[in-house]
Length: 459
Image 1 (cartoon, rainbow, N blue to C red):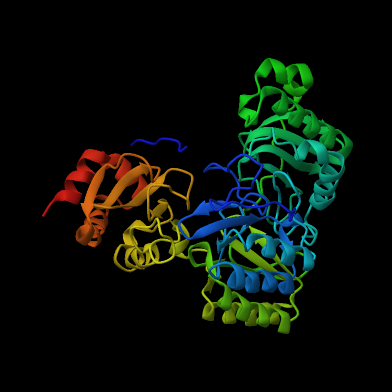
Image 2 (image 1 turned 90 degrees about the vertical axis):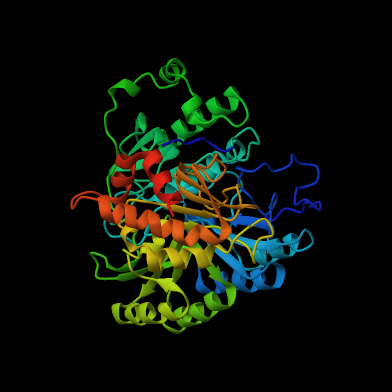
């Protein structure tokens, strides 16, 4: 199967294409910010990553109100746990930025620094990730704000504990090894990243600064994978002696989680990562009534509610269902990445949410957790920048990419009125051929594209 790669509130004027005047146009693949929103089919999109990934319920409620007043009332949580506001207009981006400042939401400039959603409240945390983030922001402020850094540069600080970020890949990882010792590694997750430095918090901050300097020296848009081994050894001569890989912890999952100090947090996932502002506001009213402290954004298009007692968290869990938030860690909808789609985005050729519901109802055999479905209204592939089983909207119908990106040449094209039948054929093919101990993904890989496409085309 094939795959191909696709391609704060500062006062900045925005042109009619959603680009900051006097700044380079934001290309697809860059990170849309308040200073440089991205033009999409439903208007301008802004991505916000507050410091520490945390907001109070009142702050998030303000953003929901702003999304309604200045956008199209849709908010999203991205795959890596950032908040997105959709449907903005050139004249309303600055108003949203003013509201963000007025609410006391700190959105640092430069690449996001991602922390565990339970940082600072998890009794099992080895080191203070928030302290490391604050130190990096303070000591490396100029470097982190450099336009020479790649827009997608990713930095993780993992303090360990119940939930960590060991399964999340990053350009630069700073992970607590034990009290007072930190590992700095590059280009990968906790298992695959290459260690370059082990030492104190001072050593870790210095190493991150050196890596940023190397990236800027290589040239604009470079990533840590572009740093050559000789250059690495010159800067980090002791790196060959480092074999530690950092903490391997459970990735955040929806549901009720009791921590070792008997406090309870509630993880919730909006269906397909998307929330209507009115539903979110009503839910946040419940969280404030029950005394929740914070909403912590998390990878996997989810968020955690902190500060409630166990009984209060259970009451919120029940209320969440009414507003479209799932606390089921095995909810099959988590395996669908769906863009805004037709009706919400002018670029979309089909209603992705409706298609997703049909998939879930009629093809349960495909939802064993082994497959990710990317339902993309057009070939831009906004919702999922990684390989998946993609269903791409086209003027002539649908393109099916068995393993790749929405913009890839499709393995099969299906007429608009035939798509439901085609997906059901795919489900029957898997149901008929999958052995008892085989996943849906493994079954499709074994059958191969030729057999699959033939089955999709059969009358």
